[in-house]
Length: 253
Length: 70
Picture (cartoon, chains in turn red, purple):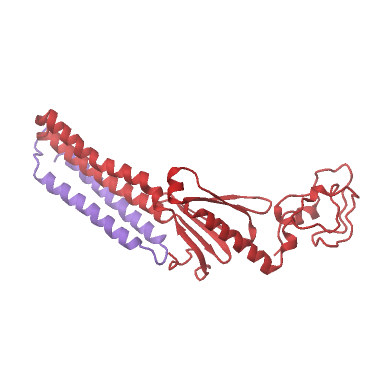
């Protein structure tokens, strides 16, 4: 499947690391339903032929023929829409981002793009007998920032490996760009001035654990996002100054 | 003419127009390198076969009954 190109303008030449469609086993239920629906009219006509064969003549036969034709044409269109639904549900991981294309029928399409830098958490979920048997499931990715979003990619083959790969690519990005120090501040939480000690903040440590020292922001040291002139009154617990809004939870590019 | 025949041909006309639009829509969202053209060819073949067989069966039926226009 890697011979496809990224279907988003400006990204056609991005190198594709992972490209996966939904697992074929997720279609089994629909395929069985379609097979049953194909034979329902045939079985009905056989039943009428057995019980009351006089009905299969004259105007009733005309009606059955017309309705049967309409039925099978609608079925064919439904089957095509289901195939589109399957074929265009694609997960693409390039060297810079994760793209999830979600097709619903013929006229509904949702394309989500997440930068690998903004991914906060990736998990895999395999639930049920058939998914466990055929090793497919959901890959869930959460993005960092003030407005965290959850992206769910359904019925992906080998979701655990895909989730691990996305996380590896994310870590490679972080390491390559030298952004290890931003990992703690990139979590999207706006910290209160009163509870923050602006000494060097270790990576991945919850900054709410720091002791209260002052409500005046000291000159910037290890944390590059500090605004030296920002002051917060003691009774303004939970309020956010303009300077804090600018720095809270965002990775600076 | 027969009510049923008019109804069927109106349905066919709407169905064909809908499918033309659907196929054009599918072509517009194609990804380079996919198999959509094969799927569209198979789909057109199937619906053409259904329509052809239906018309053949209907041509042999007795339409001169209670559905006639007065």
